[in-house]
Amino acid sequence: MKKFLLTLSLIGIGAGAFAQGQINLDNLDNANTSPTATSGGLFFFDPDLNGPIAPFLANTDFNVSFYGGSDAASLVLLRTFAGATAVGGNGFGPGTFTDPLGAAATIQGATTTAFFRIDAWLGNGPSFINPGSGALTGSSGVFSNPISIPPGTPPDFVNMPGIVLVPFPEPNTCALAGLGAAVLLILRRRK
Image (cartoon, rainbow, N blue to C red; front, side):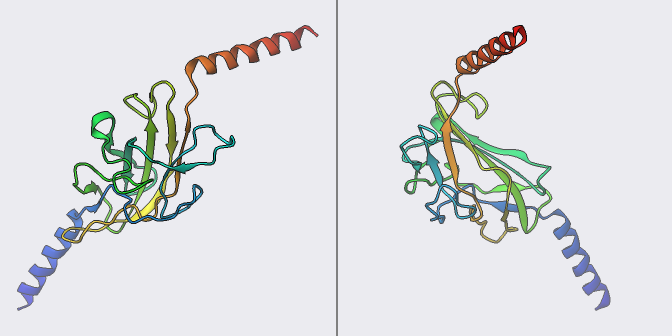
């Protein structure tokens, strides 16, 4: 009987050592309609960045990249949905995202809690770093979220903050601003 219990406990320890937590890449249950939400957040658009139009819930498909890891310093790309694959943006109401694959993402080395960052953009570009002209971009920053080990049902992003997508500066705008700053420095030195 001792051998059986010892074997059973060693199998449990071995299985626990290889267990990896999972999460659904969705925010379907989130209902916090504040753009400054720290949990239960949704996706928002702010096309004029602090102008007269207040941020409003995302009301069209948008592109998104999900990063996750067992700690804040070990984030790796889990999935990116851009272009035709980004059909999950706004799928279950304004501000929501649903993973079009419908498959849970595995977080290596995490069993109960993991850390995540979500980058989102509205534009024709292939990535958050290169979103295309006239794009809106936003990032969540790093946050923690509960995960589960199979066979449990993976949770959604319940601790996700509100993500506001704001205008991405055009490269020409940045170059013009840099040129203006250089001229001001030159004029300042002459005096």
